[in-house]
Image (cartoon, rainbow over all chains, first blue to last red; front, side, top):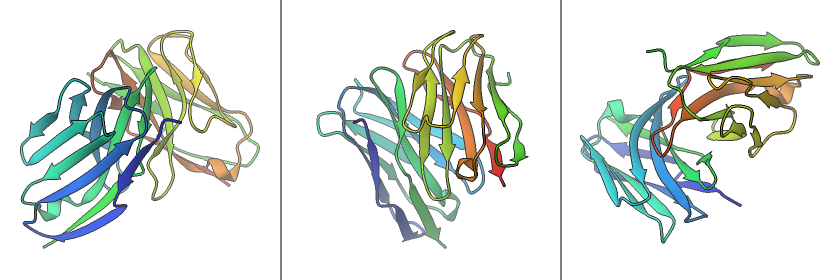
Amino acid sequence: KQEVTQIPAALSVPEGENLVLNCSFTDSAIYNLQWFRQDPGKGLTSLLLIQSSQREQTSGRLNASLDKSSGRSTLYIAASQPGDSATYLCAALFYPNKLIFGTGTLLAVQP
Amino acid sequence: NAGVTQTPKFRVLKTGQSMTLLCAQDMNHEYMYWYRQDPGMGLRLIHYSVGEGTTAKGEVPDGYNVSRLKKQNFLLGLESAAPSQTSVYFCASREGNTEAFFGQGTRLTVV
C-alpha cells in the first residue's frame, strides 16, 4: 500500500531555531514530492516541489531534500519565525499518478 | 488566471440529501483529484482522474461518485449524505510532473 507518514505530529520551538520536518513514503517509485503549508481554516500553499531525479530544492529559508532509496524527504526551516507557525504537509506522487498526503506536522514557533 | 475553482464554498445538508461539488480548472491539466480533510488530519484521496472520461478510486471512495465529462471539470457527488461526510473537500489539478494546484476548499456540514 502506498502511504506517506510525517513525524512528529506536532512540534514547538523557540523563535530563531533551525528545525527539520520529516516525511517518509512506502514506495520508492515516486515521480515527485511536494511540500505545502496550511494555516488554520485555510487552503494549501505550495512551498517546494522536488522531482524524483533531484536531491534537494531551496526557497529562501526553506530547503527540502529527497532520498528515494530510503523513502524519505525532509523540510529544513532555518532561523524559524512566529510567522512560520502552521501545519506542514508533504505529498508524494506515486505511480500511476496517485497524489498521496501525509498527516501533517503542526508547527508552533514561540516568540 | 483563476487556476482551480471550487463551487460551492460552504454547504449544509440534511442526512440523506444529495449534492454535487464542482471543481473547475482553466490550466488544461490532465490530472484532477478530490480529497477530504478532517480535523487534525492530512488530506485523504477520494477519487482521481487521469484524463477526460476517466476516473479511479482513491483511499476513501465509499459514499462518493465522480465524473469527468469535460477536461476542465471534475464533479464529486454525494448520493445520500451522512454525518460522517462532514468535512472540508479540496480539489487539485496537475500536468506532467509539475506541481499540483489546489482549490480553496468546500466546507460541507451534514446534519
